[in-house]
Image (tube, rainbow, N blue to C red; front, top):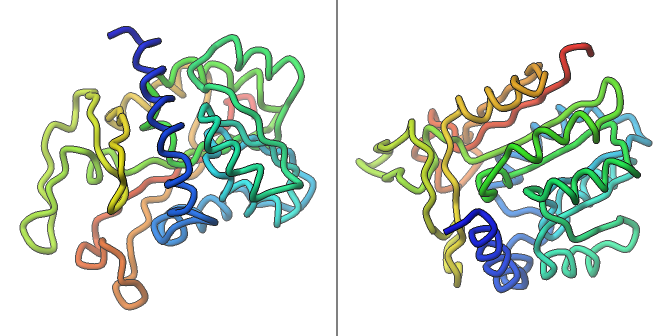
Length: 249
């Protein structure tokens, strides 16, 4: 199957899943609020007035959070269904349908828009290719701009992870990139395409376009404050968040 065919299938899945996903996530589910949003908010260091691209915005939960802190946010996603839900939930944020794997769409956006921050939260593992998006960062970011991404931890939270024995996890098939279908949420009606990559691939792809990392977090659950699935695995991080800048910055 070609990449175009894979992208089309993934887009179809997310269009079919969009309404259910929006009702499940709303303004951020427990996973986002426990492991992702707090670190992203800290890494953003918003003072008000910053221009931000929410790349792979989904239903706009993170866009709304950033907008509430005074940022000027644009959200993009390849799912027309999720963009529709984002627009219905937010009347002061610009949302547009576009694919982060489409070089032309990324280039066209860069011709007209430059951003102080680009955030890609829990999206890269849903993309068949990360290279077009990473190569576009230089065009899309303003001087001294920052790129922040979050992903399920590719060491500990993948389609191949087994949540056993009790309180532990079993890891297999880490180092090779793989494509699979899985459900990210309980009762999810349609499996999504997931593209596992080792950390090496993410980091080296950003280094290859001239970026360096200046922030990195692997948040773990506080077992005293959460009933999260990861409560029994409080020393294993289910996500990672990284902040990157271009070397000349």
